[in-house]
Image 1 (tube, rainbow, N blue to C red):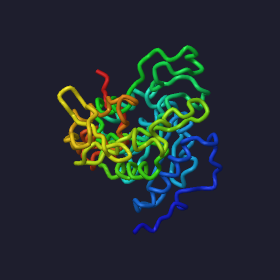
Image 2 (cartoon, rainbow, N blue to C red; image 1 turned 180 degrees about the vertical axis):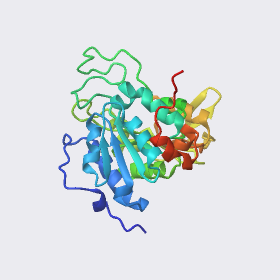
Image 3 (cartoon, one colour; image 1 turned 180 degrees about the horizontal axis):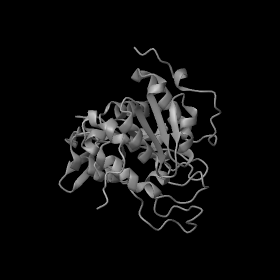
Image 4 (cartoon, one colour; image 1 turned 120 degrees about the vertical axis):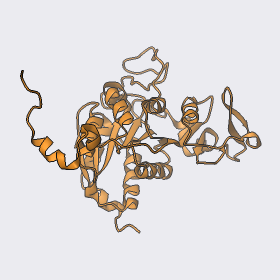
Length: 320
C-alpha cells in the first residue's frame, strides 16, 4: 500500500478557475489517483501550454512547467529524453494542442515518447473568452462564429490513432472515479498515452456534454469499454453495439456478439468515428499496443558512454 496521500500532491495555492469549471474535477481525480502509484511528488512533472488547463501545474505539489502556446509536448519530449526517471504529464486543451500545437502533438505521438498527454476538450477557447476551437461542433455559436461554426470538427481520437499513438482513451470530467482509473492505466502504459477528457466550460460552452456525461444520462448514452467485454449500454444493459462489415450498429443486447479488442487499430478507428447522438459515447481505452519507445540514444544513435562527449562537442561540420 502506498504511503502517500492526496494531501501530499496538493499545495496552498488558491485554485483559480471559474466556479463550476470541469477542471476542478480533473484536478481532484489526478490528486486522488497519484498516491496510488506509490511515487513521490518530486518524481512527477506536469507540463502545460496556454489556456485554462495551463494553470493546473500551479495546483500540484510536484514539479511543473507552464510553457508557451502549443509547445508543451515539445518541452515534455526534451524533459523525458533527458530525465527518463521522471513521470511526465502533459496538460493541454483542444485549442492549445490541436491548433497551434497540432504539429508538435502528432510528432510526440508517432515517436512514442513515454509521457502521458491529457487533452481537456471543452470544444471552445475558454481563456480568451469564447472563440471557436478546432473541436467546436458544426453550427456552434461562439464569439467568432455568431452564425454558427461552418467547418467539421477535428476528431482528437482519430488524429491520435492516425499519428501512431500507442495508447488512446477517453473520459469525462463528471465521472471522476472512471477518470482516475483511466489516468492510472495511462501511467501504467509504457509509451505515449493520449487521453481525451470531455471538460465542461460552464461559461462559454455550458452543458455541451450533459446529454451523456451527467450521471442520470450516462447509462443510456455511454458505453464503458472493457477488454473482452461486449459493448452494452442502457440502464438495464439491454442494448449493445455490434461490429458489422459496414461498421458499428445498434442492436439488442443478445445480438451484441462483438467484444472490445483494444489491440485492434481498425476497431479503435471505427469506435472513434462514432458520433453522439447517433451512437452512445464510448468511454475508456480505445487502443493499446506496445511498441519501441523514443530515447535519446535512439535519436542520436550513440551509446550511453558517448553522450557526455557529444553534449560538450562543438559544431560537427568542417569548413572545406
